[in-house]
Amino acid sequence: MTPFPAAASSLRVLLLSAGLLAAAPALAEGPSRIVSIGGATTEILYALGEEKRIAAVDSTSLFPPEAAASHPNVGYMRALSAEGILAQAPDLILMEAGSGPPEAVKAIDGAGIPVVHVPAGFDASGIAGKVRTVAKALGDEAEGEVLAGKIDAEFAALAADLSKLERRPRVLFIYSLVDGRPMAAGGRTAADGIMTLAGATNVLSGFDGYKTLSWEAATELQPDVILMGERAGAPTDRDAILALPAIAATPAGRDKALVSMDMLYLLGFGPRTPAAARDLAARLHPELPTSALPVKAP
Image (cartoon, rainbow, N blue to C red; front, side):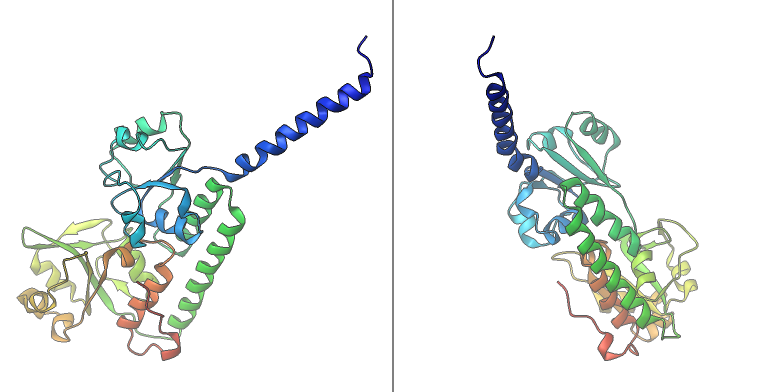
């Protein structure tokens, strides 16, 4: 018979409890080597104060600047290499919708490492959904709710300001020129979403996705404003665009109404999007009250 069985049993419980307590901090810490694929996902990690968990990012993760400067780059989100991502020894992979190619995504999903697919969404609720998805993956739901609530409130305030305005300018978003012709944004795109949030009408909303137009078709759309995104190191040649005969024959051309903004800021649909939508709204609606103008975001 074991002497003092009650004492021995108590000792075992005490040792087990001590072991669990020692392990608790590690369990509570959650993932520490996150590969973040998608600019919005990376911005959300920074907005949540979780940037120290990031092990690597993709090439669309350009904001904040230190995201790209401080981490290995696993490539463009639509042209991923499973081997390159797994070589980072991640313990969590956050992957925005639209990542590819499919065979790489399938290999990553089957590698035995936790993968969270962050949903797309080109409206206010979609951004809050991204935040909640990322926060849940980190075990940081409370902070996620705070950030999502802030984003929702900012969008609600902008919508209230815009509801007082009667005019909804007709906008043509030109993503790029393909063989000298404009590739424009239709419905179900980030460009369509930001135009809607900024109180504008997308003149190409009858089509989904991006569509290459003839210049004659661009003229027939008769936009009030041309909207373009700027890439780093490639500023929009405003005068050249407005001088094109097809654009000059539109209200936008006659009024020299061309708005260009940083592409990632404009189309990122992450934590900065409420500021981007206000910034765009201020440029599209000169009549917007001064008190409703945004604080300029990077």
